[in-house]
Structure formats: C-alpha cells, structure tokens
Length: 349
Image (tube, rainbow, N blue to C red):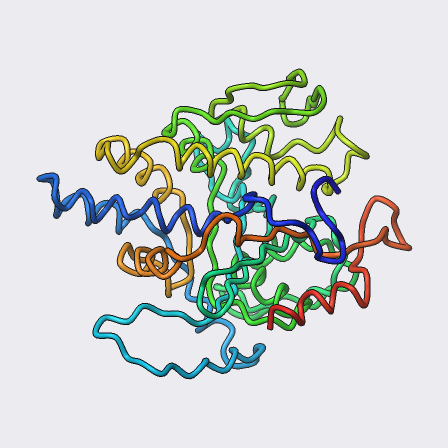
C-alpha cells in the first residue's frame, strides 16, 4: 500500500484532510455571499442543497459510547466545540441521474461506497487521524434497520462496501461501529458528479504519477508524469485500481491519497475567498452532492465545524490504512490484521 504503514506509524502528509474538512471550509461561501447582495437566496439555496439521514434515530442507543467530555476551565462568550470527533466519510456512486451515469455511477438500487474513511479529530481539534478502510475487506455485517421497516439479516464474510448497498448510510455507520467499536459522531457522503464538479469548479487539479495507468474499467489512460486533470479524469483516477500494483483496492487508496493532497493544495492556492463568484460555484458543487447526518445538515453547522478546526494544520493530519492481510478464504479479499487493527481503533476511542 503506497504511502501507508499498516501499523499506523505513517508520517504526517497533507493527504486526506478529508472530504468533511473540505466541505466545512467551502460551505463558508454561504456566509460570504451574505455580503454580496444575494444574501437570502444564496444562503437558502446552498442550505437546501444538503441532504441528510437521521442516523441517530435509526440506530438508537445500542451503539459504542461517546467519549467522556474533557472538563474546561473557562467559558468563552461564544464557545466553539473542542471535543474529539469521529466522522465516517464515504465517496459513493449512489446518486442516480444523467451526470452520475455518464461518470460511471449506479442507480439508487445499485449503490456502492467506493471510498470509506474514518476521520478522527482529537480533543482540542489540533490533530487528526484519517483511517482508510479497504472496500474489499471481509467483515461481519450486522443486522441493519431499513427505511421501509424491518431489518437486514446479519451476514458473515461479507464485503465491507456491501453494507451501504443493502442498507445505505445507516448500515454503513452500523457496520463501521461494529468492526471498530468506535462511535461515529457524524456521517458525510459525496457522490461522483459532485466530486467531478468540485474539481472543475477549482479549475482542475495537478497530479504527478509515478507510472503509466491504462485502465479500461475507469476509462483512464494516462502516462507517468505531471498532468492537469479535469473533473472526469480526476474521478477516473480516484476509481482506478487495475493496471496499478496488484490491481487491488489497496493501490487505489494510495492514488486517492495523492489526489486529495493535490486537491487541498489547489484549494489553498486558488484564492477563493477573494473571488466570491468562484467561491459560490465551488460551494454549489459541494453542497448539491452532499449527504450528511442530521447533525451536519445545515450551513451553520458545517461552518461551526470548520471554525472549530481552524487550529488544525495540514502537518497535524496523519493518514493510515486499517491493517489488513489476505483473506484465507479468498486471496482477492482482505481481512483485518489483528491485533494491529484493534490497537489502531482503540487509539481513536
């Protein structure tokens, strides 16, 4: 796995500051636009773009406990939250529609989570750890409640990304909590078209590849070297797994980290806050393709999250992959490597 230490001792690259950190910063566009003359409509529009799922109500109380809050010695007039957070971030092809179909996305009945990571923000919110979970990991998938009533049956040796397929966001969260014993405080999901439109709104993204990629499945054919990618190409890079390494999901995770690092550098150098029109375009791209839990489903809540992370620098974000080994039952699948995986999750509780 490129750029990972399976025991969680990776360095501190600026890689995955995570989709939720990008969304929190970019949705500040709603507040900036308030001073640009189209205040009410812009705020209403961006706010109503965001879709949400009431995960807390669906899962009830049978979940890992929340961490005990750290006592504070002072009470500022307008306090921002400082407690630790765990956020499940998914990149999915779950949205139906012309854009997603053209980009390779499935219908709502064929939903898959292509990317999954747990973003852990330490108490004080000045350090973070991002853990990627390979989609090919075999897990015990718990019984999950369904919107239509009833529940799914438990499944053993099921692929991790099947949780989203059978039970959407609620089952994805429950499965992650089941295999990690870590409470997910929030959930964030962005779809194919939203990711591609974000890249295009930023004017593209520059990446340097170490090898040629020739992948008919993702429709990416590109030589080694430095390239400026548009949205469709960037999405293809994020989805590529064939033609790199052993063709498994582990190699793709390395490319995704490279791409997210490049996106963060592009965002920081784009001068968005000096260009309200462009900033609004970026915010529109993000919010129109964003699904969150009900605790993050408004601009005000996302902005508060972003403000609470102002002390978190790129050097304070560590990216790792859940330690895995080939599955005894199938060499094309992986299982958690113990006790390393449990030690990693225990450090985030």
